[in-house]
Image (cartoon, rainbow, N blue to C red; front, top):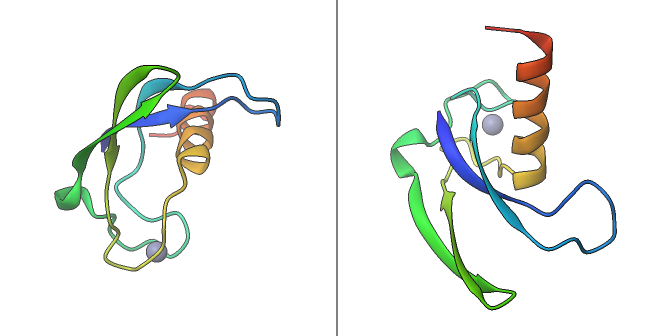
Length: 83
Ligand SMILES: [Zn+2]
């Protein structure tokens, strides 16, 4: 599934926020169940004087996908060449 997530950088320092569009599995990485693809919805928030839009979704299994984990998953999928 392709979603927009917010990227706050990998370190502890505040580097602002940017929106990234990433493609990740439609399966929960914790239990392997389906992610809530049909619950993907727009979420607007205000930060640093700008309005930004990301996607939110609710997994039916109850596991919560953190944006940082989704970004890491997307990076791993690109570098590993896994299909
Ligand atoms: Zn799960």
